[in-house]
Each structure stands twice: as structure tokens, then as C-alpha cells.
Length: 441
Image (cartoon, rainbow, N blue to C red):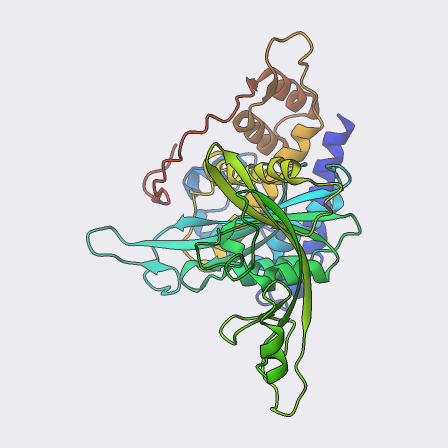
């Protein structure tokens, strides 16, 4: 119970820290939140964090129902417009860092990297997110790039981009470059992140990568290597990259398993983009293993990693990569359980506020749930918390309408059996943002 209180205290301290830096997080620092009003900065931030799936009017009634002079929706919108989205990003990062809960897998921290599209209210005035296709309704899209801890089930970092100008590779590099931890960490990613530049960024900070890549018949990293004739193999590679073509480099690149020319249209941050003809060629070394393994009878996948062979043989890599699915299920919970499809504005700044607010409350729920033990000793099946119930009661706890003991009792009582993955193919259907007119009462 004390741990639950500490988590709420950590979130409140993060909010207070941001509110004390109005010069950094307000649009007009000299004027904003300088007068006493019904909605000071901290109260406005807590209200956005407490949003669920209702209309703005009903959200304010629920969250601010104790106030005899409850502000109008118009007054609230004016107050939240004074706060920059970076304030909610700072709260998300500070809160995650304050509650340092770390679980390791064989001494390594497992970090999944992935992206997910988020449908937002249609905004024709924003060409970078607006889509209009013949035969379908127009829509707006944002892209969430996230760094997710697979063992603690929390988001560590995020980059939000408008879909038309999104770049997952650049987002990954930004998150890797600002990742600061002395604990050995493994960045796990799918085929969409296959790139020498991404691998180099992870290698440069002294960490490890495990990416699934395309097979040799596709145009990817594996193509061009001299590979064993076996269906399954584990091939160590020490590759030297260069982006300058001279007689020397052309002769070196004939050894395809040790040298590779990186063309100018393939961006690489660790080689000079321009150089004089008289300048000597620059080189960059990458060390990794190419692992081709059988995942199902007759079906093979290829992994690229710099994890040591003696600690991580191919079968262990197969299991390790399967854990990446945790970030996919977290996106589902973020959208459908936390309510990331229910926005309360179509303005870019407000959308960014609400995305970082949902990420913060997702972590808040997961951290509290991790403090509560589920008794499985007398049960036939293994049980887990009901995340939907936990999210609802944790939101009420944050807003001050219930006690830690009530939170613990409700979460312990509402559990679900752990079900194994069925292996059925995913049914990919687009889900649009919920219109402002169609919200629950």
C-alpha cells in the first residue's frame, strides 16, 4: 500500500516540477498563470491526465464536480492552450524516471521499439496529418514511435510525428541517442527498422540489438552476403562500411562479408556526407551475427544481433524476439482501454498533450498493478490483472476519489486467466477516432 502512495506522490511531484517552470512550459510565460483563477496550471494538467472517453463538458463535471463554481468548457480550453505539449512530455519522462522499477532478463533490459498510427479528429487545416481518398471519408493520422520496457510493461520514451512526414528510422535514432543507462539493454525491433544506421546508433552507445530482417531473396541487409548453403545458420560478421568509391574501396568491397559500400541515398550518420576527391576514405565497423532459424515447420526467419553467442544461442534468440509482441498488446491497451481514440480537440498542441497524458497514465496503472500480488497458489490456471478495471480505478485514485486500500482490493478481486497465443492471423481493420458528437454520458 505504501508503494501505491509513493507512485502517486512521484506523479504529483513531476507535475509540481513542471508547474514551477512556467518560463519553459507556457506559451506566454510573462502572462500565463500569473493571476489566481479557477484553473491554475497544476489543476489544468491533472484534468487532462484524468480524461476518459466522455465529452469535454462531462469530463469536467466528473473531474471538477467538487467545485461549486466549476469552470466552463470554454474557460478550460483557454487555460490548456497556455500550456505547451512539452510540459506533458516532461511529466511523462520525469515520472517514469522517478519510479525506478527495473526487471532484467538474464542481466539484460529488454526494450521493444515500434510505431503505431493514431486516428485523430479530422483537421483539413493540417496537411501533414490530413488524408482524403476517393471513396472513403477523410481522416487525420499521427504516428506514435515508442520505446517500451518488456519486463516492467512501461513506456520509457516516445516520439510523436504527423503521419505524412513521419520517419520511424529517425525517431528510433533519436530515442537511442538519448537513452541513458549503464544496464546492458537489448533493443528489439521488427523488419521495418532494418538499417545499418539504426544498428550503428545502438552499437555506438554500447548496447545490443535484436532485429528481424528480410530474407536473402528480398532487397535488404542479408542480400549481398556469401551465406552458408544450410537452411539454418548462425554467421558472425565483422563488416566495414564506407561511402567513398576509390580503387582501394572497390577492391576491398569484393570481399562481401567484410566490406560494404554505403550509397549516398542510404543515410548513415557516422560517415561524412560529403568529402573532397583527395580526402582519404572513411570507414565504420559493425559487428553482428546473422541468424536464420526455423520458427514453424518449413518457415524460416532471419535475425540480426550483436548479442554474444555463448549466452544467446539461436533458440534463445527466437524466444527473446517473441517477447517483442508485448509492445503490440500495449498499443491495443493504450488505444482501447486508456482511451487514446477519444480526443477532446483537433488542434495539434492539444492532441500531443493528450497522447503524452495517456502514456503517463498507462505507466501509472502498470506501476501500481505491479505492486499488487495476485494469489495463484490455489488456482488451476495462472491469473493476471484485469487491465481495464485497473486503469479505471487507478484514474479515480489519481483524481483523489478513492484510497490505496480500495485500489488494492479492487485490482486483486478482478483478475483474468492468462491465455496462450492462438497463432491465428491478425485481422487488420482501421479504427477511426471517435467523433466529438458520439461520446458516452
